[in-house]
Amino acid sequence: MQNVLEGVIRALRDELLSRYRQFCSCQQCQDDVLTYALNHSRPKYVTGNRPMGNALTAADMALDQSRAELTVVVFDAMRRVHANPRHTGTTPSRAPG
Image 1 (cartoon, rainbow, N blue to C red):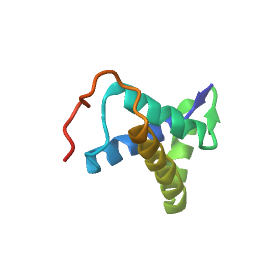
Image 2 (cartoon, rainbow, N blue to C red):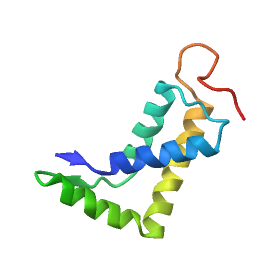
Image 3 (cartoon, rainbow, N blue to C red):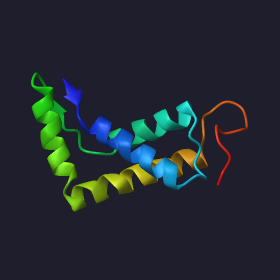
């Protein structure tokens, strides 16, 4: 069993991180964003025929409203993680831009 939204949320997170350089992209922060976003979105599980489940999720994400809703969840996760980072050290993996 797999939550196929994980791949979609990862892609949205990566896209947003490339646009908004003020957010840390260290592995800990990336994982925290993913975890928060997955915990605050409705899961879409598939079993067995994963390619079919992935295709259905991709079709659903093509709808602007579905993508917009998940983008809001991911961006909120990024803001929350940025406000309370758990990474070690004081230097994020990239400088703000």
